[in-house]
Image 1 (cartoon, rainbow, N blue to C red):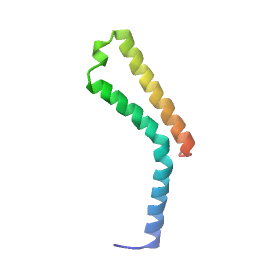
Image 2 (image 1 turned 180 degrees about the horizontal axis):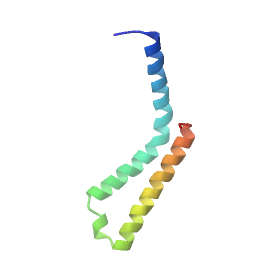
Image 3 (image 1 turned 135 degrees about the horizontal axis):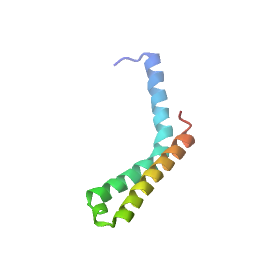
Image 4 (image 1 turned 45 degrees about the vertical axis):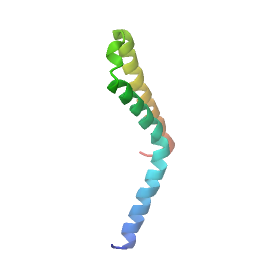
Length: 77
């Protein structure tokens, strides 16, 4: 295994970036996982159309809002 200093610095930067991003992104992943669970359980088609649509739009808006806050908190462009 190479121990080139430039490679080690790049790996360290990658690790720090991941450590900064993960705490900010886990709420987005949790909401996406919850939505996926509801979708796989086939709950949404059983709802009235207006409620089904409202939940889809609300979930998409919540995902966008949480992701935007996450990237702002992590200071990632």
